[in-house]
Image (cartoon, rainbow, N blue to C red; front, side, top):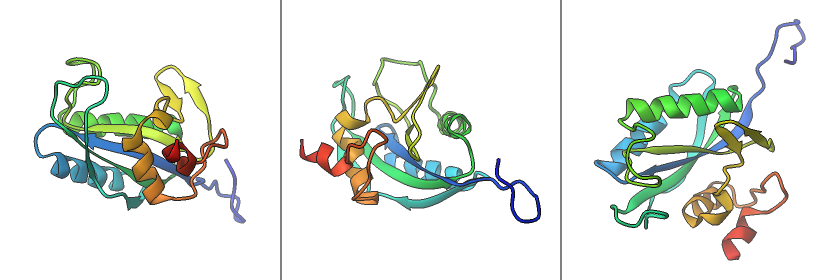
Length: 163
């Protein structure tokens, strides 16, 4: 960890992007509450939140439509710490992972999409999110937040949207 001029350790802030989604209950209220809980997390600053958009379900069609968006963060948390916080917020807002069908209905869904330029591949954590490039409901809000955003592999979000 780097030190400042006085020799004290300094926590470096990283830019991260989180996918936001919900398709049960008060979707918008739940997403707004999730963002508020994230913003109240020590070491996390919510920089911007995209517009929320209504989207069709992917992977499991027999369920209500989703409300999706994304948030840009500045964080001192590492990727695993940030993921753990996202999962804790989901649990606090009523989501129990592993219940119901894969890609099925959920009160809230918080996905760590990007963490700076880092590539992480470890049990339970893959960054960039493994299906990010295939999902318009993720790409559109990312593009809204940062039109020139480039993935760690050099692909631009704008180009992925046009494909």
